[in-house]
Amino acid sequence: YIQTKPIHGSQKRVSQNEQGLVISLNVIPNFELEQLILSHGEKVTVLEPEEFRERIRGRLKGALKGYDE
Image 1: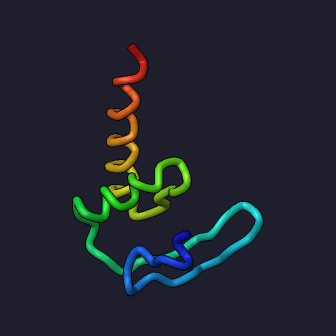
Image 2 (image 1 turned 180 degrees about the horizontal axis):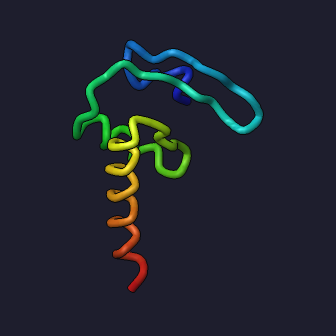
């Protein structure tokens, strides 16, 4: 899906194999990018920058808290 509907105009394919697709984006991480990444759920993993990866991880952990009760 991300190949046919790119996240951003700067999107470039880094690699692709049976495990998945790795892309690069040249963007400034912001709330809109967070929302877009989170909208893809478990199908997307942020690899770097580490600070943005941790921000996404925190958002996902927060979302899970509502289901742990």
